[in-house]
Amino acid sequence: MPLREYFAAWCKEGKGGTKPRAASLAVLLGAAAMALIVCSELWPAPGGGTGAGAAPAQTAADYQAALEERLARLIGQMEGAGETAVMITLENGEERVYATDIQTGAEQSRQTHVLLEDGTALEETTCLPAVRGVAVVCDGGGQVEVEARITALVSALLDVPANRICVEQRRR
Image 1 (cartoon, rainbow, N blue to C red):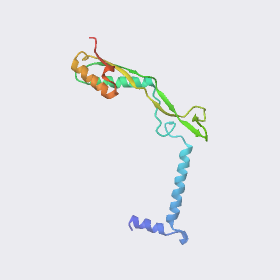
Image 2: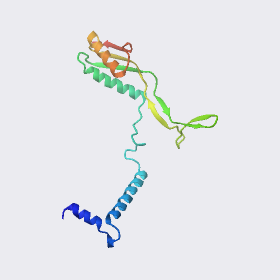
Image 3: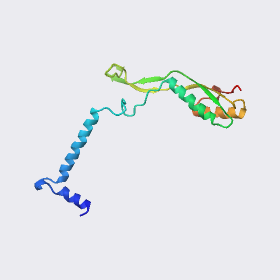
Image 4: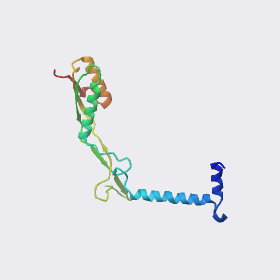
């Protein structure tokens, strides 16, 4: 007897002919699913995260250092650039946006921050600062063609106008 026919026959036959086994199986699977849901709420997620998709906090200094390092590596791979050092300045520090609750009445409305159990405000998002200017010092910085290519690259990547990008020759 093939497996499919055996399973179909098993589902139709009930204990004492009272209930089909398929109904008992469905009830059992439903109970198991509910038990898994309850268990998932009791144990914290692996990795100690604070929620689904929680990303580690990144400060403006970390952001700036990461941008400088990645940009220096990229420019260093350009033909004619050679050894490269990059410095980036940022507009401001990071900006945090907090969740608010708006209560409206007949004549006025009131806006308050949403507070967590520990008394801190619920943070919706953190906006990293915009790039203000970029300085690039590289071996090929004295060549006009290399300087123009580096300026175009930095401008395209960071959305910074060319007048805020300075490319210079490294001291030999």
